[in-house]
Length: 142
Image (cartoon, rainbow, N blue to C red):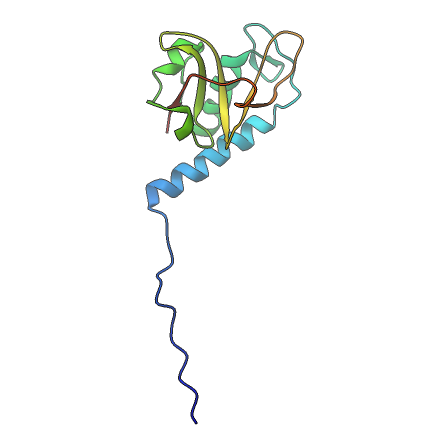
């Protein structure tokens, strides 16, 4: 008996749409940039690698990766993109604490339930978890 010829795979490989792959790679670049500053001391009003506050960190990282100035405080940064739910957040999205127009903290989503933020005086830039300190909403900037 002659063996049946091999059949080519009938399932086409899934290729992300160009916009989706650009979002993913830019989100990863934003997280990679933010990770460079883990351990940087929290400084009230700090906007550069000598010390960051929460919105100083997010502004600096976004400026480095995207060239876009998203503003220097949380309420300005809320308007830098499209509002999303926390469950929709992907790498590189901004996460906010407080009601829109009255936010008091911002972080960069690292994907899943983790984020990178400059928490408070006496602490340094570090990872956090939505399981322990849950944001109220997110914003997709890119």
